[in-house]
Image (cartoon, rainbow over all chains, first blue to last red; front, side):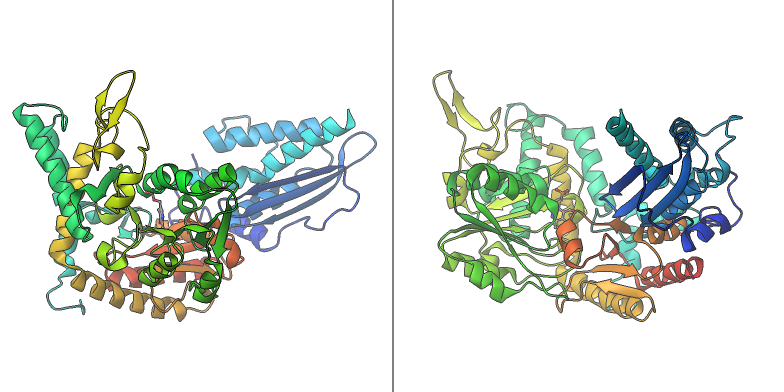
Length: 152
Length: 410
Ligand SMILES: Cc1ncc(COP(=O)(O)O)c(C=O)c1O
């Protein structure tokens, strides 16, 4: 568990999360994406839309990530979008698995490779909001599955 | 307090042990009464007393405890009949909650009275529990679900309702008070207009009974459903009122013990009202405790309750409307104590989390009323819902909490 911040909420609404919330990265749509992913949470109207372009070796060479909803889903989508370039789809899935474990039960030593996604650990203090943080990753995993089904 | 001289809100708060808590290091400000209300000590005591002194099954034994439990259970029914001014005790059916009451009417009444091409009318501001049972039934029967639209303030469009009524209208099922917007609907008028076309009427009273006197004779509705837990009683117990002539003609909802007079494998004779609709061992403790809740509310009196809540609502409406970047959703002329709002800069989830950190409990989301969210083209709202134990200080805390949201999201 993260340290309880001295000032309540500074953890959840800290600089990093709010910076991504205010100006999300990589949010221009791609018109030639290979992987198309979208996930919707009807309970709060949250939506995450991700697109990936793959190069000849099957590595990510273009990313678009857009989201609607609360600060957590928007920050999570933006942070995730920064970590996708140059990864193969299996590497993306591996990172997704790690991120899920991080959010659901916390990670020990093996948290490397998650980059700024680690900042979202603070959301574990607010269990009902964990699904907001996971929504873009869930979208991506579903999108990758659909891409594989289509290309194999 | 500046409310009615005889109404001492601090004394009333003293009757609710849960309100004395601290949450996240701050005194609890409970503004989620629309979801469920807190319970006075007398209700908690009624449950403890039942399980420590009279616990036994009802309507079954000749022994003393069973007789005492039966007396208390039936006594609660009589209190509730009086509370809603129904004609007879047998018109009061114990259910689990509002949802079960509505489903009972769908299965035992509507299924036998609605056919292909018939209409069931609901409004645009129903809770899902007053939409889904009718969708299921309409699908099964080939009937149509018609939806009365609302205006931008959250008022029902009565002209549109009038136009919708006709010879095919078999049932009108409409909320008495909207849980998402707070609108108080002109229920007696709605009933009268439906009856003029020969249609039966069910009112969803879940959000009405905690806030205002409801009178079955005055409303003249055929069915009225509500939940005990929103009326300062326990969860797991609710009420369906039905006019005796309707209930008499309806087949049972569930089969089992208590709802029969005699059973042979050739023929079962159903029990009289209300037992025909109370199959199996009921929530005896819940019913008795709901009786205690009704006693508590009746002792306070709705004169005082509504005066206090109206004053709070006026105060809260004014306070929230004056904050730039906050928009109230639901501004009908007649409202119960519900303040639904959205903010330009912050999503309702973020509002809810930031308020929670300050010990303020509100509800965020679509409030199980997605069609009304669609009507206002928003995914969700933040909703503060009042009870008679709330104070102006609670509203002040809410305003301060919203200021904090604005700070974080500036
Ligand atoms: C207007 C309305 N109808 C029905 C319900 C359903 O009540 P319950 O969940 O107790 O059955 C609610 C509860 O939120 C409500 O507000």
